Image (cartoon, rainbow, N blue to C red; front, side, top):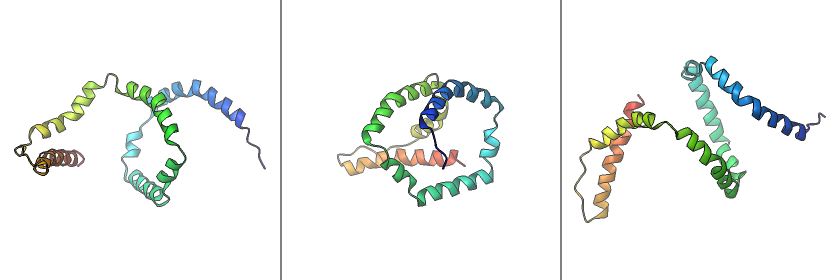
Length: 140
């Protein structure tokens, strides 16, 4: 039976961390992800993989493998840095993408305020309906 050397694997992983980011960036220029990704075959494959994952309850099983404390630690240490890097300098892109939703919200005529909280929920419902309608329109 083959023996796997985990320590050697860990060292190779550490070395890869120095090499992979630059190689990844170089390969992006050669990549054409969109042509294949928007094909009917890719859509079929994605649906099949998603259905299989749901049947096998992979999400649930994956969640069971991680404690809440492990998730919190990773979210604080990694997530906060990654979200910052992902957001920096993107305010124009955000505004451009949010603009249709802002316009949809601005176009809503809200029902009058009421002393009845249930009636006031209709104000929220009007906003949600406008946003859902805009999202569906944009996804066509």
